[in-house]
Structures are given as structure tokens and as C-alpha cells.
Length: 173
Ligand code: AMP
Image (cartoon, helix red, strand yellow):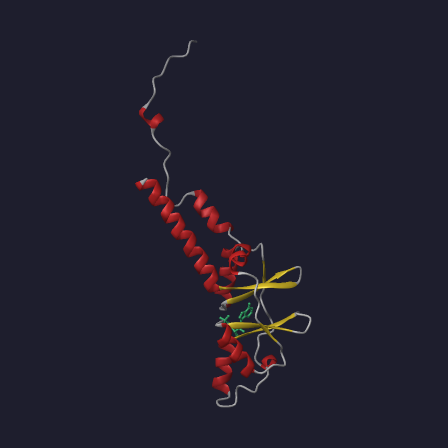
């Protein structure tokens, strides 16, 4: 049977439709990893020894403007994490006598860590569920950085701003 000629339809010339929740934008948010943060932030890790005092920890936290220190031995093996929360708790327990205590008496030993290829969504979920804001990053059993909940939220915020700009450019041209 001969094919009947069909003239162009109105829909043929219409630009592709875009939507705010495209598969692509959702996919990008779901697959950004810890590596993306460490690449921007760098791999600085501020650490302290378990034998050091809380006095030294307080000085370091204040000087480096951070909220937690990883606790390591002389081989840089991860032994624990000490956050400002731990120090505040100890301050309430031992008013006026807190700073001479050793880090090992106050730190959390059961540390949850992540790897460079873990997604930010997964890290955020574990931090939220575990109610902590810091996560040491490991590569081949070595410490290669620390991500904070602030880093993850900031990264996602930048992504959202970028996506909004792209949408605006699509609409306004
Ligand atoms: P943060 O919210 O990180 O200041 O810490 C709140 C509490 O969780 C403190 O007792 C910390 O020692 C502990 N903590 C912080 N980070 C971790 C982590 N990655 N794994 C387990 N405990 C943690």
C-alpha cells in the first residue's frame, strides 16, 4: 500500500519540554559523592592523641575553627572522634575541673566512617540517623579527610542554585 504523505504537524517544531524534576537533575543529586566534597575542600585532617588533654583539644578546636577532632595514634590509626558536644557534656559533669581530663576519657570510640565513593545522600542519611555532624573519610584504611553535615548541605545548595540558574536560562534565554 502506498504511504500517504503527511505534512509537518505543529508538534514537530516544538522545542523539547523541560521539567523542574527531570530524571537528569534527580540523578545528579543522587550520585554526587564524598569525593566531590574532598576535591573542593582538600584533605586536611585535624587530629589529636588520646593522651592529650581536653585543654589542648579546646585550643585546637578554637584555633582551627572546627567542631571535632579525629583521635589517632602515632601511626595515624583512627581511634575515636572528639566533638565539641563531648566537651560540653564533660563540662556539665565536672564543672571547673574539665580541661585536665584526657581525650580518651571523653571521645567516642565507635566511629562511623565513609569512603570517597559513598553518595552524599547516603552520608547525610547516616549522619541524620546517628545524630552526629562529622564523618572521617577513609581510603585503603587511611584517613583522607573529614566531611561535615555543613559541607554536604552546602554542596547540595550550590547544586540547587546551579539547577535553578539553568532553568532560568532555559525560560528567559
Ligand atoms: P557532632 O554532632 O559531630 O558534634 O557529634 C555528636 C556526638 O556524636 C559526639 O558524642 C561525637 O563524639 C559523636 N560523633 C561525631 N562524629 C561521629 C562519627 N562519625 N561516628 C560516631 N560518632 C560520632
